[in-house]
Structure formats: structure tokens, C-alpha cells
Amino acid sequence: MYGEQCSSIDGVSDEIPPIFVNCSKYFITGKDEIYADCPIKNGTDPCYLLKELHRSDSFSDYFLAILPIIFSIVAFIFNICYLIAQIKCFRFETMGFKKREAFLMSRSLSIIVANLLFYVVIIVWKVNGFNYTSAMIFILVGSSTFMSVTGTYITLTIVLYLAVAHHISYMTTVTLKHCWLLIALIWFLSTVSSVFVALFGATLFYPDSAPISCSFESCQRPLAISIVVTLSICYGTVIGLYIAMMTRLHRLVRKSSLVQARSNSNSMIAMRRLSLNMITFAVGSIPILVVCIVALANLRELSSLGEGCKSPCKAFLYSYLFIDVEMLASIAAIVW
Image (tube, rainbow, N blue to C red):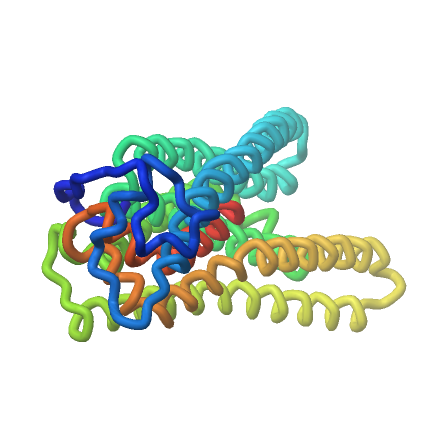
């Protein structure tokens, strides 16, 4: 399941080995005999390991494959329909609204691409299991989505603020061409940064099979801290920007006179949009940060799963850690 493939253990018997006599309800005849000769540490309950092993297998099938795929299909269909509707509206909107619609279309397209790449992750995982390549692709999908959506939200927030607080400058200075260039820049920067995060992020969990040498104390731990801090800064920047823009718009509404009723109305609409965007981004992104922080806190144990070669004994002895990894991966997959 993790690491490179090693030779399996021979000597399968149809009888329950003595070590598993007390956990016959978890034992699967014809399958679990190979774990009887694994070197279990003193004080470790073999029945607990066997239970966690089968729990891990069931968990990965349901929460890492079936459930994320169902959510992914629903999200894919919804965003395809939403993107088609946005394109139709874009053709008939005024120039001011087209600028905002361009960023909304970019966000929808980003989610659609993420869904397509998620299917690639599932295929690679089912063919080769968890390894450096599948982990790299998985992290690439998640980080690229997070980065592109974060960049889109930041730019969209600024555009909404300029449209209300500095309407004349917004209409005369900011053109649709500028918006497309900003979108292209967001995609380029998010792709480059995501490739970096994926290459080094997968190294944290598979140091032996990674293309670069990375020890735990001098490389893995500092690298993990840097990645988590960077993602936290991106998250905090977006939330802080939302709060700052909403505060300024609120002050703008209070200072406006009754003659500026139309301006007040536009400000209130912009504030509602900012509030909705902030809630959506906060709720959708906080699980990713939690997953990263938990992974950082347990990095030493989790990275040990990628050390050495893959074998039945390794899957059995570290079954309790597989559950933790699969829970983190499933949360990330469902959110993405």
C-alpha cells in the first residue's frame, strides 16, 4: 500500500493461526494467514492491528473512492451547467458586469479541471496504490485548486470594491483585457506554485522514493512548516481582505447622502456578495488547513509509511496509521 513492493510471505494455511485465535470475528480465512509471522512489537495487540487493517480497507474503498466520486460527479455537473449559464449571460451583460463574470467563469473552470484531475488520481491510485506519484498528483490537484480559487477570490474582492468605491476609475481604467490578463496570471502562478508544493509535499510522505534526498529534521519538517505557513497566509489574506473591504464599503454607505441612493444600493449589493464569497471561501478552505496542520503534527509517524518497501507485514503493522492517512486524504478529497 505504501512504499515499493517487497516479496510477500509464503505459507498460507486454512486454519486460524494461534496469534489470531482471540479475534476470529475479524479473521478472514484464506487471506489473513500471511500476517501471522509478522514481527509484532511487545505489548501490541494483534487483534487490534487486524481490526484496523480491515477497517482501513473498507474505509479506503468508501471514503477515498465511492463517496468523493459521487460528490465529484455532482460538482462537475453543477459547475458545467453554471459555466454554460455564465457564458450565456456574459454575451449579453454590460462591460461592467462582464469583468466580474470573467472571474466567476475562471473559478468554475478551475473547479471543473480539479474534478477531471481527481479522476486521474483515482485511476493512478487503483492501478499502482499509494506511492510517490499518486501522492504528488493528489497534492497537485488540491493545491492548484486552492491557489487558483484563492487568487480568484482576492482579485474578485478588489474588483467588487473598485466597482463601488471608485466607480469612475473602475469603468475607465480597468478593462476586460486587464481582467483576462489577471486571470491568466492567476492560473500561471497557481500552477507553478502547485507543482512546487506537489513535488516537495509528496517527498514528506515518501522520502525513500522521492527524486531528492530529504531527511526529517533538516528537510521534511522545515518544508512541511513552510507549506502550512504559506497556505495559512493565503487563507488569512483572503479573509482579512474581505473584512477590510466590507468595512470600507460599510463606512461608504454611512457617509453617503440620500441623493446617492443608487450608490448605496450598489454598495449593499456588493457587501452581500462579499459576505457570501467570504463565507463560501472560509467554509470550503478551512478543512484543507486543518488537514495540513494535523498532517504536520503527525508528520514523523506518517512519513514512516513511505519508508522502505511495500509488504503485507508493513500494511498489517502500520494499519492504525493507514486509517489516519486515509481520513486526512478523504476529507481533502471530499472538500476539493
